[in-house]
Length: 355
Length: 243
Image (cartoon, rainbow over the protein chains, first blue to last red):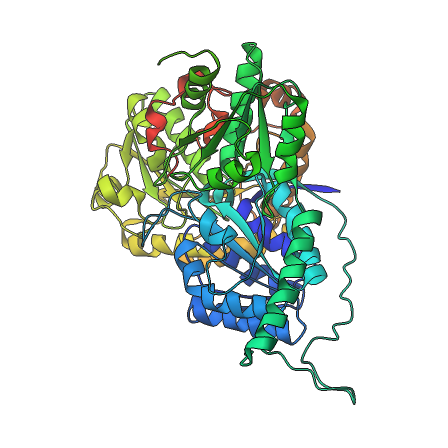
């Protein structure tokens, strides 16, 4: 077992290599360029293909092609680039092909800036492209968790034949943390009867996203929907942190969750019963975490802490379903919530303290 | 230790150049040398010298870096003040260059100002980083960087660490690799840099004559504030962080 110091962006690359991904197509954009930079060096070492496409549109369609031919494939970008990829993502979801897409979020809307935000939550979880489709969205919050979740992402992509979106922000991509790299696990690429990689005397293999007869399109949408329903039941992931006797439960993912863990520790030292739910899957949103905590009966308030003007809070409200009030604290445009400010919000609610 | 007026730090992405350049420059200030630090990083978008400019200036260091709006951009903008540091015959200059051969390209721009023997060009090594794990890969990277900087490395900086998870074994293991590289290339190891809280343990076990540079860690994600030096407990100045 070896310990190395890695940037978050590099960890996405190394995680993908270890998961057996041998094709990467991408286009540089701050703050995720180190991912491409890393794989440009690393892919040739393992006999893989790194290709810098001429645009994000080209990247995602190369991913579409490679996935259709049966390859284990990844791309990455930041908000503006992910927006450009939406058409391709919708096509891949319709064609039911596996791939992993990484979005290292930067300030928006528009060209925005290169600072860390979480404001692509809606785009990620609501399906930024057209049509009735869903992406499984994974949100790691440490460099170690990136390595572990990339493996998971490829497993889920191939289990459900669906694109997986990994959502991080610029800070997670840029920061360096020690990671344990296990001995490389043997990866296994199962038979791909759906891949358009030659008939071999069998039936025709066709990858199609055109359903011109409404009856057939409805049938296909129904099939996709059954799959999404199954994912919603089986694949919710989250972390509970000090939630057992908590009267106020913070809800945060990724970088905001790192800040919130500090908040929980600080509040606990002061005798304030505060806990944290950290969603790891943003879609499916971990409703079960809320049902469980509400069943304990101690919680009085939820406080959503986000690096956006309030996006995940909608899913929290749906999950809580009016059973408790859900409050919000956010910083945006590339500013980060800091411990002291979140603690102020906590005290306002718990102690009815005015700042 | 600092007989050269200009000290330039290069190295692979994430090898620790910025922390070392900052701490080395502050070390010169403490010795009474008028010193300017130059942020030549055109690679990193976030953890850059400019992020802690106010703290450094407060500590007596002059800082040359992109200002105003440009400080938040990922543009390769270079201040004309850089040239004055190179030409100044009085001030000491410490240069923090961006990572890898791509970051080092910038030095070619200043080649005419860098006369032979007038500067120290140090290559920073963290043996725990993915592309500099062993002697062969480190030497390969040194050659890449020398080629794109169009300058010869004059010394090595031994900076093996795992961030907060660094232990003494890690430091010594990495330092041994750095020494084999130094022997192979016939280069001196200029100094060994160690987080301040680990200094005592390292110096007790070390049996060689080498300069030890204690490090305060400046480039921290915001949830680490207050864990290191109280001087750096800066959520107020941290309004600028991280960019």
